Image (cartoon, rainbow, N blue to C red; front, top):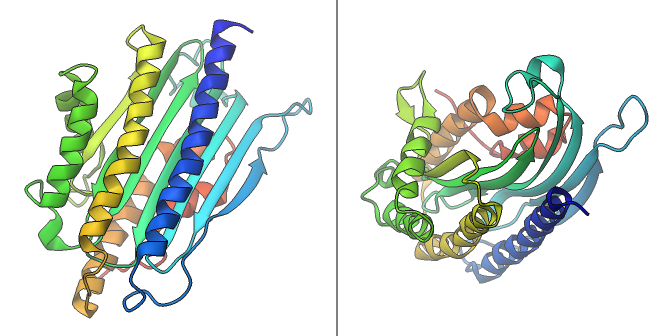
Length: 293
């Protein structure tokens, strides 16, 4: 096995293992939720394998596992892994690094979105991936999306904790990465037609290739682990807080903004649809209930 093939297999195994660890994390929080606020049975993930349509010559083009939970604490969570390969369409190949001269690609990763029932608990997104064309790189990040007006600022304790944890991850590799990738998140998760941020940011990185694959892979692993250990701390701060209809109205308004971003600007949505991904998994980022004025 070549070094590249070995790296692909190693990265894929990590993304799939992280998916299982995140399933267990969210299910544990479902178990912890007080029944007085969240009646019913704790939610559990349903994992559904899927495969891309075969190529014209009948060859396999990969697939993945869609993991969905609809529970009592979390209205909707999607945690998905995929490993897909084949050829980009000519038009799309021109938009992807290293694909214009050769449209063949390989991509593997994990992506999740969590929409809590309780408006006091922020929504959250995380993904990390490895992509190979004539070049190879990592991308990903995590961002926090509070759905109450009072929580939508960097000074709020939830945002401060979230940023501090990811700052520490970045600083463990390069002290220049956090300011670069936090700024990139602020730029990327921006709704220009609204002139506002989608949430309170986090980190976002793409085309991450320092020349040291092991180090870059370790960084992406650290991003995934930081999410897995940080988000439960934020959930537990608010898990016992009650809410009213006014809070629910704020929540569904900001969920609407989330929909706008993912359908208009999100690269992951575009990549998944352009490469024949699982439409249900791609669009599972949509919240179960959202409103517009």
